[in-house]
Image 1: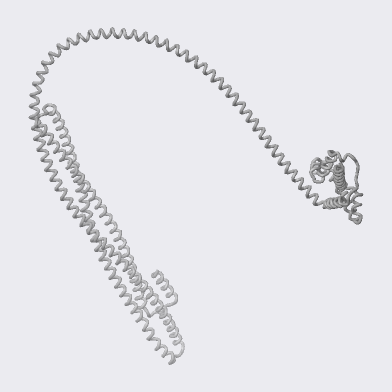
Image 2: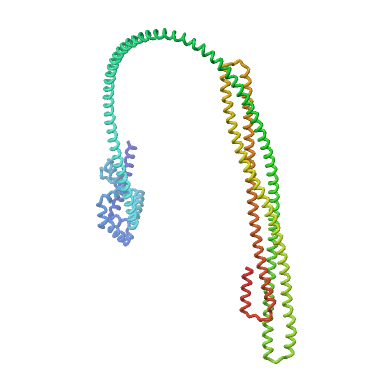
Amino acid sequence: MATQGNDKHQNNHRDNGIMDSIAALRSVLMLDTPIRDALAVGNTDNNNYKRQEAQKLCFSPASMTQATTPASRHTHMNTPMSRIKTSAKKRSSSSPFFKTPTRLSRSPEVQQSATKVLEKKIRLLEMSHAELEERLKGEIDQRKALKTAYEKLSEVQTKQSSQLERITASRDKFRNESASLKETLETERSNHARTISFLQSTTSDAIQAERLREKESFKTESDRLKKRLERSEDRYAKSELLVKELTKEVEHLNEDLKKLRQAHELAMQQKKERHAKEVATLKNKIEQTESGLVEQVNKERKSAEANYEKLQRAQKLRTKLREEYLLEKDKMKDKMSELQESLKKAIDGRKESEQKVEKLSAELDSAKEKPVNDSSKLSSAGDQPESAKEPQEVQTENQALQQQLKDIREHRNQLQNELEETRMELDGLKQNLEEAERIEVQNEQLQQQLQVYKSDARTKDEMLRNMEVEVKKVENGNRNSGTFHKLQLELSKLKEELADSKEKLSKSRLSNLNRLVQVATHRERVRDLEGDLEELEEKLNEENSVIDITDDRKRDNDDEVIPRKRLKTKGDDEEEGEAEVEIVL
């Protein structure tokens, strides 16, 4: 019992300490001024300043309005301090220990803990107004986010409810439709059963009526057949009499047929002899035509081989001419470059000579005005041989140009000779082409002859068919006769000869096609050679134009060398230089 009493006393002591701490917190939260003054005696000025700020915060109209609003109540209730108050109230209301207002003496440890807690709470209350506003803003933002989420949830709920209503409506419709369909099916089944029963009854009645009709029709038909049998018996008796009369007529006809058979056999023998003679003549003609065709084919092959050899020679000559032409073209280019350089040197020398002549003319003019001195005579005597040397250099250059022109002309003559040779070869190729065209004409004639032979062969086929028909007739008449076997052998021989002639015709066609292909290749080669000849002629014309230009330059140089008496001016020199530049270009 003593231990139980001590435990109760300790529990009461703990509860009293907790209640004291809660009361102190409540007094701090409710801003009881005497308690704060007792706790902070030394710092009166600071406490007064803080008290004024706390009064401003707690008793400002904004804070009062916020406290009155439901949102502020909600935020106030959600704060940790309010939770502590509510929990303390609940404990005080629920626990039986708080009913008695008994208060025990505090221990120093409890007082120290209470003072520490109070100091912490005071520090929290001494926080700045800005931090509290920031917290309020954060809580307001959280509340707004919760509101938006709640609104979204409400919208989703409304949508789900509308969807559920639609689904229920569609389900009800489906149920109603299924019920209506079941009713319609039942009605249709009943109607179908009724129709089936009605049809069964009608069909049974119709079958009975048809059976009665068939019995009546069978009776009528049997009566008719009896009448027909009686009539047929009468006709049979009459036909027997007619058959006896016809047998006598058939015997007379058989005798006539025997006579006709003998006459027909004689005619067939005569026809066979005629056909044998015709076949022999046709064989001779075919052999003659085949021999002629073979000879023509051999001749054409030889001519084609000769033409092919000629074309190969022409191709070799063409390649040689191309190579020579390219080499000569390169040589001509080198010569032209050398001539241009020599022309440039000649022009430079002419300009220098003209400058010297101008100097001499100026000196002569000065000599006429001034008295003649010994020094001027010596200078004039020393300059005269230089002026005499200049035309000699020009003459040597002209001689070199003449030699180059001679070489170019000789080269041109060689090219012309080669062109004439190629033209001669082309003439020969053209003759070969004409021969090929003649061969084509002959081939066409041969084709016409082949068509004639084909028509003859067709007529022979018809004759053979007729012979086969006659042989079949003979078979029907006399199957055991020896003439039938002979006719069969002759027909087989004729068929073999016709097959051989057809093979020969096909071979001749192939040979004609090969000849046509060879002629086409010859024509293509001749066209290529003609194109090459045209290119060579164009190049020769270009070389002739170059030679003409060099001749003109030579003449110009000769004209410039001969009239050295007149002194040239600067204008004449410029015009001549421009003309020479144009010629060179």
